[in-house]
Length: 235
Image (cartoon, rainbow, N blue to C red; front, top):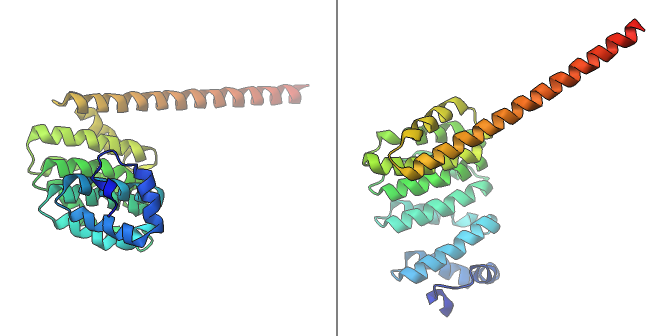
């Protein structure tokens, strides 16, 4: 284990690049996810997270290893696994995520609402990587009120849910349900969630206005073409 993993200000990219060329270092980083030393554990996670973002294929073989952390009593372990697995879904050629979908999304009802918030926040990335799962993901996120968490905390999780919806809304087949959900959050008791919902609706209105203007422009052009065509015939 490189000594600088004890340093809170390590160069994540540099260590990641070394690990990609050094199997022993990479194995050490993976082992460190269980470390009781918070700094070492967190730094190791950050390096592995960087790798899953930049070179996910390099860690795909460790998928099952990361899944084990979802069953840990330690919330940090679960958060780490959620973030790493979400990044790996884009190279999940064996559809491992599909096989553990319910197990993964049952964590929305985890004992800690923080786990639910992290999972909700990572869902946009997963939905982009797994288009065929978008409706299932949307439905699980929309069912957040059925979890055991306090209403105030659920309101916070809903902010993360909306952020994820933003990532795949344009390609979603469930736009109506998403919009209805977001509009309800305009009255959220969470100022942060309320702002996120407001921004979502404002952006949606801008996009709709832009589309309407584009349609009107096309219609005007088509009308001008028809008029020109009729003049040519008359001549």
